[in-house]
Length: 451
Ligand SMILES: C[C@H](O)[C@@H](O)CC(=O)C(=O)O
Ligand SMILES: [Mg+2]
Image 1 (tube, rainbow, N blue to C red):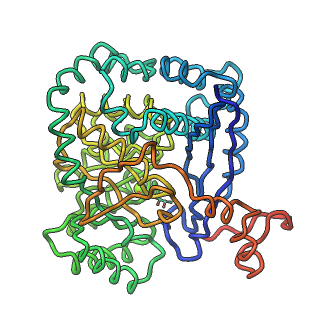
Image 2: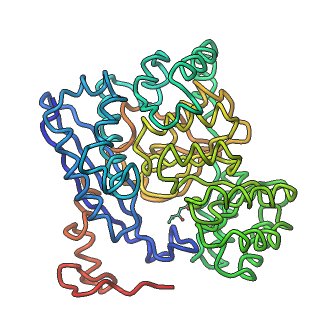
Image 3: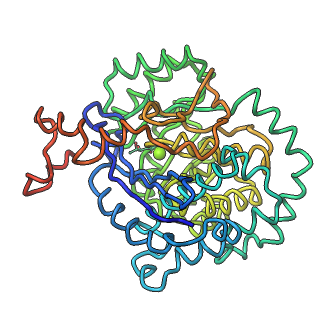
């Protein structure tokens, strides 16, 4: 029985070093709404959703509100009927009005649902990837709410696909346990980084065996050309380069801009325009296909329905699921199944707190149970906040090493939780005293936004 749910507003001052900065989010403070579910028998589940600083308190409030649907429930009942429980959570008759299945409510759903999955995996003494990879197809499909997607995939079809892939599961698991899963890095390319930092980081990641690098673009074309040239000169023509505009352009602007960057041979342009604009992405995909540039998107795709449209229409060539934006593992499994059926490669988004920790589990599920290939696929890697997790990701020779600890790798170290809780944590007290940040309890207006 679930006896309580706690949620904390956790923030790190990453804006001070421009870590995580892009064309739209110029001063991100990597943050999360951090949830712990407590059960009567002492088991815990930890979950989070990623946020950027201001606004985390709103997600925290939404988690408080949703928690009433979880507290008092029998965890085993939830897990036995996870798909229908997920539907109850996202269809609560009054709360759904302020979604449905999008925005703050869905971020809060993700944090809670991720914590439930962590609890389930811990209770089963398995890392999350193993928990789902070991499930019988019927059990896995029972976790998914197929409402709104049966025109693309039905539960019966999903079971059939998973059964067809079942004979290879053991082999794939053995392989990935030895080889790990390929990663690419964005750590070299945050928009606010100086030339020196970009240069130094490109050399560092090259020496660590990375073969794929992502660069933020989209604010200034001549600056983008200069940065692409710099990175290409260091990494050479044989490595992969991806660029990410974080939604800064209109559709025609995206096409024109990317034609200018085409000589640098980017594999993909990520989030060229509004994350909701399926037809806009389709137009960009069609225009850039002859140049060998694909379109990647998904980190702000609000739910499985929008993913369905992107996948169905050919508007995305790389599907970037995010572990904490749509409603947690249940809904992400639906997206993996649709992507597999429609032949689109999934390359998860992981620029944020705890996202690398989580997506490695999801992509392992894909590798073992669905695509059974890492060809043309990789998981994003950024080097942020890993040290604050009890079971941080391990990346060696540009590969994620398969996590072994039970759970979803989402538990924060106690000191981190105490130090970085906003605004009361000890680290924040020091930052307020230094004058680098303003204590919101003493401020009358929001701090100015940098543009
Ligand atoms: C604000 C985040 O850092 C964002 O730029 C991450 C992102 O787009 C990515 O990792 O991709
Ligand atoms: Mg991105």
